[in-house]
Image (cartoon, rainbow, N blue to C red; front, top):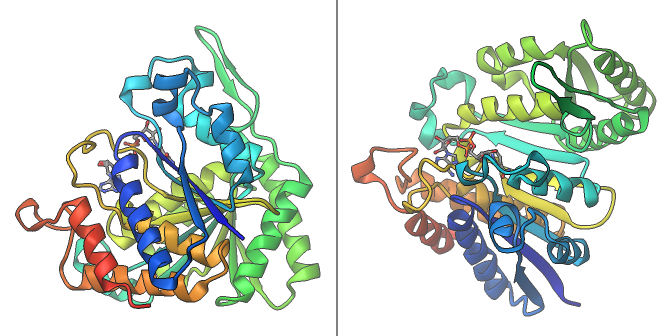
Length: 354
Ligand SMILES: NC(=O)c1ccc[n+]([C@@H]2O[C@H](COP(=O)([O-])OP(=O)(O)OC[C@H]3O[C@@H](n4cnc5c(N)ncnc54)[C@H](O)[C@@H]3O)[C@@H](O)[C@H]2O)c1
């Protein structure tokens, strides 16, 4: 049976990191003798607007919904900042997540020992750091009704019980295979959606995951604890916007936004795998972007969709080994010692031991 993968390079540094991720995927497939892998590239974001006038063309959505897994680089950039908000590049990605029912975004945060001097944090808080941020992805403020006129604007945040239940269950299952600890993050002292979130999460864990230690903290405190005591977190469960912000904050524990991968999953159908960073217009076209997040997203694809955790591990170990040997892109070292995006990708491929 063919394993079909759709790649969506997108905009800015998206295509630059995507090509390295695809090289890793192809190299692993060759090493494993996976001759039934088909990789198809499609348009999304600004690149799709430029060619077809919309950020998520119908043929892209069709190819994605028929695929086993999807890889995305990044979308957006200043070129499209003045287009109608409904057809902005970022809207293409939101529509793709919604159409495929990708309600859960998994963002693992680990710290590489070799990079500890790059983070502004105390090293003893980083050793063995292993946080999984589980972010609800298709509800809340990013999908509620919004509007504006000249002097007023509004966005609405809505969450339903089933939406909260399914993401809580997924976090519970993940925690059961990790350190048995879930911290649910909300703003229940102010927001009704957060009060519903807290009650629902509480009930799901009491009834379905009695052995998991669950605690609740407010998002403002979570932002502080992520810096003051990051090592105490295992799984962080939170809603869409809080998760978006906290996972970017957590990326600094690792040392650079360019290091971190993510997986977006639904109940069934393909998963979407993408680095957590955006299109980085400030460095696009220079060949200096860090492709780690993109390459590690391929590892997540092997773990969560292709059911080959040993391959995921081999890719992760190759990235750790490459970073540890001092092969670093410009976001991690001074410009004179930095390797290019392409050189880093090639070094990882060399280091994969399968
Ligand atoms: N999933 C996505 O596609 C996604 C996510 C976030 C932002 N965006 C879009 O990307 C555009 C730029 O957004 P932004 O500047 O706020 O965020 P960004 O993540 O693109 O960049 C933030 C900073 O991190 C640096 N950076 C990011 N990725 C890097 C990498 N791989 N290697 C080295 N440095 C890296 C950038 O150079 C920049 O200084 C916007 O249009 C935004 O909407 C898209």
